[in-house]
Image (tube, rainbow over all chains, first blue to last red; front, side, top):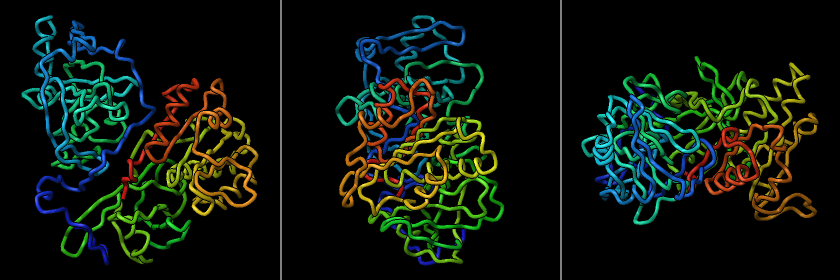
Amino acid sequence: MSPVSRGFRGRRPAEGAASRLPPGQYETRDFPVLSAGPTPRTPLSVWDLTLRGFDGKSARWAWDEFVALPRQKITVDIHCVTKWSKFGTDWEGIAIDTLISEAAAKGVKTSGYVLAQSDGGYTTNVPLADLTNGKAWIAFNYGGSPLPPEHGGPARLLVPHLYFWKSAKWVRELRFMETDAPGFWESLGYHNYGDPWREQRYAGDE
Amino acid sequence: MVEVLPETPRTRTVFFDVPGWPGHRAGQHVDVRLTSEDGYQTERSYSIASAPGESRLALTVERLDDGEVSPYLTDELHAGDQIELRGPIGGYFVWDVETGGPLFLVGGGSGIVPLMAMIRHRAALLATAPNSATTLKTRLLYSSRNWDEVIYRDELSRLAEADPTLEVVHTLTRTAPDGWTGFRRRIDRAMLTETAWAVSENPRVFVCGPTPLVESVSGTLVELGHSPALVKTERFGPTGTPG
């Protein structure tokens, strides 16, 4: 039971916004930048993306090959653990489903957990089931333009149904693992799964 | 809440007695949750300004005119009021004595707050172990719009006067007092070249402030040869998001 903050009225979300806001979130029209270190800048000429199976077999795409894959347009609400949510963000990217089926043709087998690895050393872990069946992408356009570096360009993971730290910026590899292992923020006190609708912000939240 | 102290025209430090506070590390933050009489709740994060081990928890809050929470904390809250805090939170943008030094701290505006917790923590450590000063030598580069908006101005100057291993370098981006001889521009490559510890000393770098400042400073430091792994950042959004 929370104590009433004497004299606090607050700013209710607009009609229609309330049902789109997970608990404890507020709507912003900005696109805030949250990163733990300097923004890496990898030239497209050396950028590549790798899907790596548990047995070490991998599939790799150079930038031109990657953006030539069948792409999708995505409009989603995003929710940052620092409390802001942004509605109706427009992205373009390659579905993880597409990458998995392309990689399967090269002998890459999936397993139950995925560790995303990024330029700059960032990592985050996501169960495979949260990346498949149209739930996640690797996005490279935002609002009709190339994704800016501070927002994770050239390409970032996009897993909009989880807190946005799971949508790893500057992603370069998805590694399939048989057992779950915490990533960067998951090792530093944040929740292992991060469902905004269950307000799983920090380690220990239900 | 036990006391509010004005820092600058737009910032106040709010002190709390927190029963059962587990202690924190310099650089961590707390979540503040406000609840209205009809049960509406909202939350924001604020950096902790006090050093670990101080008896009261201090948050320094910049009043954002269009903010939902900050005007309540700076203007409404009175001694004796209760408020819900959760924390401490964050395990990366933190400095402990084990992290080592030398320390190069770069702050913009209210981005000084978590850096001040580190400076206060360091001062408390040196008071008990003065010999560690050499490895913990610290330089703060602090960008403010003008002299009146420099948060913790007197305390920073007191600490620097008392401690030859702490240097505080100000830059003022809008107006400066008559006779000002310090930097008078946004932080740029030349200023960082002049003020940062040499790359060969492996300085631990913490940068906190508005996104454009943090992007520019951290990117430039990497270009100058600093290891990205030693440059830790905390940004607040384009228009000052923690509101």
